[in-house]
Amino acid sequence: MNQYLVVGLVFLVVIAILAANKKVVETLKNIYKIEELRKRVIYTIGLLLIYRLGSFVVIPGINPLVLGEGSAYASQLEGNGLLGLLNVFSGGAFGNAAIFALGVMPYITASIIIQLMGMMIPYFQKMQKEGESGRRKMNQWTRFLTIGVLMLQGPAFIANLYHQAPTAFVYGNSFGFVCYATTVLIAGTMFIMWLGEKITDKGIGNGISLIIMIGIVARLPHAMLAEVNARFQTATGSAIMLILELVLLFLVFMATIALVQAVRKVPVQYAKRIVGNKQYGGVRQYIPLKMNAANVMPIIFAQALMFVPALFSGTAFAAAFSSMTGFWYNFTLAVLVIAFTYFYTAIIINPQMMADDMKRNGGFIPGVKPGKQTVNYIDTIMTRITLPGSIFLAIVAILPALAIRFLGIQQEFAYFYGGTSLLIMVGVVLDTLKQIESYLLMRHYDGLMKTGRIQGRH
Image (cartoon, rainbow, N blue to C red; front, side, top):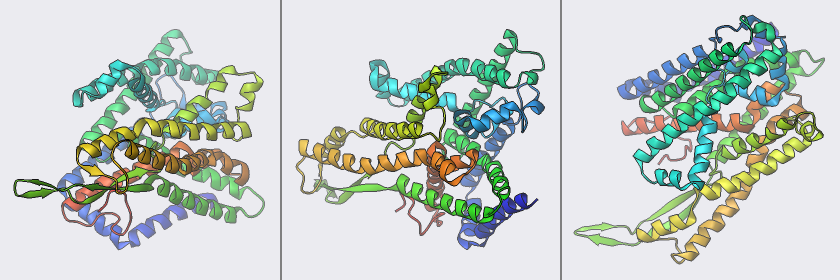
């Protein structure tokens, strides 16, 4: 009872703080006054509720009572870092064996593959340069590849489920049932993708990103309750440690927000031009170079490679990387994150193209000659700011393991201390706030953070 009371009090305190903030209340009123924004917000919430309901609809033929707490399957999710992370990303649908069990991760995998192919294969490079029509073709290829990934992951999910909980299969694990269940999982993921596209078109924010974030946030109450239970079962100091954990979590969130929004502004001067009776240029602008231009992609790539040792199960190599709290696992993960940060930043930031665009529009960096020197100047700045950004990103990637090892935090609650889940939550919330902010400012209303520093606000 005490544990539930603590969790309830924490959420009540958060709600009370928001309710007491007149600025938040006034902003919510302004959102309601703008008809288009109000409809978009309601539409987004409605589709997200549909997604959450689907996370509890179990695959027909699976007995959900066998998969509850205390089962072998639940224990596997708690003890396996990879499967536990997939369960967090799917909002618990993975652990429920729901029709949305695989979530949008197959789509993310397919998107990464198509993105890499766009860098290496001329056919996809040509599509990237075709504008809107090329983007539609790329999206179509991504959907087809998503189905291919699902056809591999679906049977693997069913096989693992049968290995851990064979009694959950009401009609057995025949070939026909595997085909049927895989079809259901494919349909579930494709429906989630459709929801995401609808949210992007008619709602607020990026639909796929919001779905991932809602799945992660949906596990927060359950993870917090498990952490409270663990703390109250200790002999002494449980309440103090819980307060310390929440304070550290707040500080981690603040540091991550600073990382996501940190930019290095490079001044650019544009020459004056007289066209008719009007003067153009002659003003100083800035090129915002992000310290973490690669965003969450390096962690995703690095974690994908960390799954490779699992293919060599039974060997000393696999044993060394089997625990997410082990030294070699985290050391290798940190090195891969740093390497992929430089790799991905080099791909998405093209100093040569930036220098050519400035030269074509009559712009130049004060004190730097146009052409080769401008390219070298931008490249040097990116190299310098990417180093601290990559190191900080590597620290964020291994923070869950540090929280488990040194603070004794439960695995599911530790996911909120860093890694992909933390960066996704911070990035999606900031992006959604920017969109709402733009709607409010266009109608001459104060935004959500009038005194804050949301990047892009003027």
